[in-house]
Length: 174
Ligand SMILES: CC(C)(COP(=O)(O)OP(=O)(O)OC[C@H]1O[C@@H](n2cnc3c(N)ncnc32)[C@H](O)[C@@H]1OP(=O)(O)O)[C@@H](O)C(=O)NCCC(=O)NCCS
Image 1 (cartoon, rainbow, N blue to C red):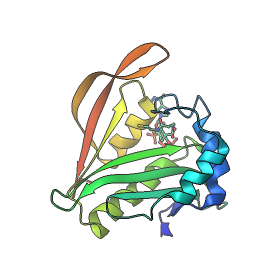
Image 2: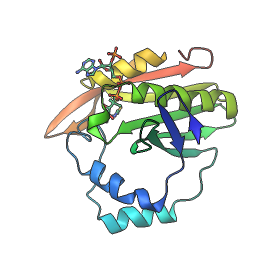
Image 3: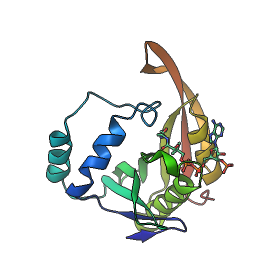
Image 4: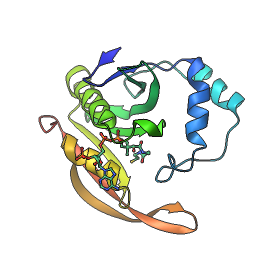
């Protein structure tokens, strides 16, 4: 377990499948995220059971609220390459009653610290839909810098949206 100030980060268990399945079918949670095709609970469970172990190129962690030990979301550092020291970051909190209390900010700070200090990454990047103001605020708080705007790359409800690309270099984490 990696401890932040408000959250702990831990590997996922098959018993987390129901929560993941519920979050992935919640339109409010998935509003600005690529939700793919609907999957059954059985398929979600199987994908957790069959998932290869966490490794340098793919670290998927559950976010637990320290106050009650409840699993509230996920963070993922993926596509890390030792040659470049670059990786991509994803985050979401599926338990909506925990939104707005600093949990995502704390989870991001902790996983980025892990990336820079333990994995010796040089840079962590992400994309965020321009209209996703809460996520953008979290990334700004942690120190991510806007690097560009990708036009018309995210489709939702029959409309195309732009995304920002953002990056955080080692030493920029706040
Ligand atoms: C986006 C998300 C990760 C934020 O998590 P969170 O725990 O609520 O974030 P925090 O509480 O740490 O910080 C949220 C910040 O955004 C601000 N905020 C919230 N809604 C906002 C809005 N509509 N416009 C501008 N800022 C907003 C909050 O005030 C807070 O900033 P502050 O600390 O300066 O007051 C969470 O809401 C979520 O998982 N949403 C669904 C999935 C998603 O969009 N993931 C990101 C994909 S790129």
